[in-house]
Image 1 (tube, rainbow, N blue to C red):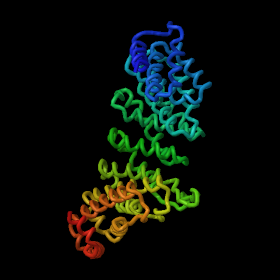
Image 2 (image 1 turned 180 degrees about the vertical axis):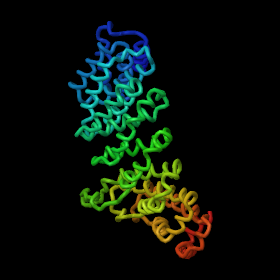
Image 3 (image 1 turned 60 degrees about the vertical axis):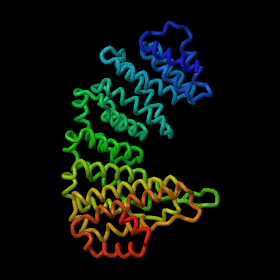
Image 4 (image 1 turned 135 degrees about the vertical axis):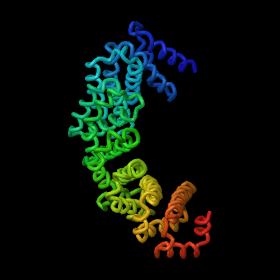
Length: 405
């Protein structure tokens, strides 16, 4: 506890006073990066960033050098850089962050993001997002320029940084003005050949629909077709992996499809008027998302979890479509209801663990809520397919009880 308190004191003093004259202060803090306690390591990272913020010319080269020579500490050192940027942002016009600091920071962040470690790429993006908030006129054009990099990690970080800045409540009116001309370039990355970049761009679109709908609205008619394409299922995305004596199916594209449906859920709530001209096609895409295109009992745990999440999102979209596009839903009842019924009667293997049973129950409850919501559409209960569904419910006491609940 004494070490934690000492580090916190150094951090608070360092935020207010230049401690570069205290010989050995960097070494004292950096030694704590090697501590066995995760709390100590985290607070040490925070302290280093706070101390650095008062004299960037002195401390930044030291952090950069340490990142080169101690790759295992890269994540903690990146967190320190994030604290530097947070402190500089809080200083406002008093910030001592100069243009040359932006250049050197961006160079280090792009170099650091060239890794398969997602946590490091996330921190690199967050840092550049803070930089974009501090100096949008300098950073946004730079991020847009690096969107054309051959390195997919760079492109992913650029899109994610732009998203983080757009999602911040601290985005200034001036910053919004700088952002606007570059929206189209960043959204176009929904069609990027790299899955990580696609996912980042879809997450950006989701943020824009929530927080900047008026600015984004003119771009949506051209953007939504790219989004819809990301929901398409392809058997080429499936691969079989050997886990001990068992073979499991992994769907590499599933995370992008799931993210796309989550964005579509936002869209149907925020701007259905843009979707309206293609509403029937939109319904078809959601039906596909609620459908099992392969034997999910043979998938990996991670794939199954994402698959369940995607189906639950699609159930939510269908419920909303029943309110805003009821005639279209009723016209496609024969396509909508079969995958819902298949989900409701799904059973797990006898050796399924409690967590798997609870997760399936959660999915089935969401599915039943969707069925009940669709049943309120005028004329839906008179359709042939809904009649068949009710016959099946009447033969299954458990399902009938859930439907009437």
